[in-house]
Image (tube, rainbow, N blue to C red; front, side, top):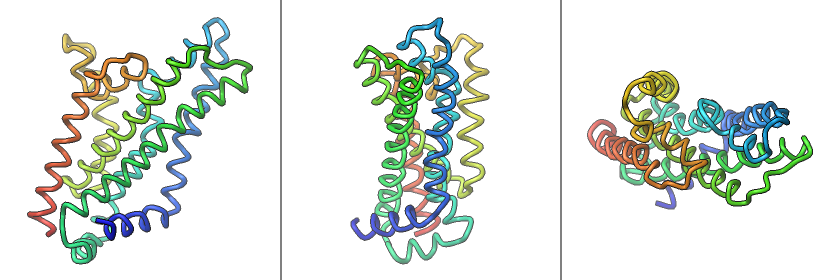
Length: 230
C-alpha cells in the first residue's frame, strides 16, 4: 500500500493544475465571504453562516472535486491506467491510494474555505463570537468536501471519463437537487443539500445520504477496476 500511496502522491504534487485548483476554491470563498461581510445589518455570526449556505458551497468545493476527478480522469484520458495497474497490481491498493489522496486534498481545501471566510471577516473588522459555530463550520466543510471528492473520484472511475464526472458533480447538486427542492421530498433526503446543512446544524444524520452514495460508488469502482482494468 505504501508504494501505491507514494505513486499517487507523486502524480498529485507533480501537476501544476492540482495546486491551482486547490487554491481556486478558497479564493472564491474569500470573495463570497467579503460580499457577505459587507452586510453590516446582519450579525457577524449570521454573515459567517450565510457564506456557506446554498449553492455557494458547491461552487467553492468544485475545484477540489476536479482534483479528485483527475485521479482517474487523467488515467483514462491519457491511457495510463494500464501502466498503473501493471505497476501496482491490486485494484484495491490503486483505489485506496487514490481515495486517500483525494480525501486529504478535500480535507485541506475544506479547512482553507473556513480560513478564507474568517480572513474576510477579520479584514472587515469583526470575527464570529461563537467558537462552536466556527468549529461546526470547519468540521462540516471538511467532511462535505472530502465526501464530494470521493464521490467525484467514484463517478470518474465508473464512467471512465473525467468530463462526465465533473458535469455530474455540477448537474446533480445544482440542477437536480434544486429542482427536487420544489417537490415534497424532504431536504434531508437530498445528499448534497443535507450535507451542506450539517455545516450549521449538528445533526450527523444529515451526512448519511451523501455517505451512502460515496460507499456505493467506491464499491462500484473497486468492482469496475477488477473487471475492466485488472
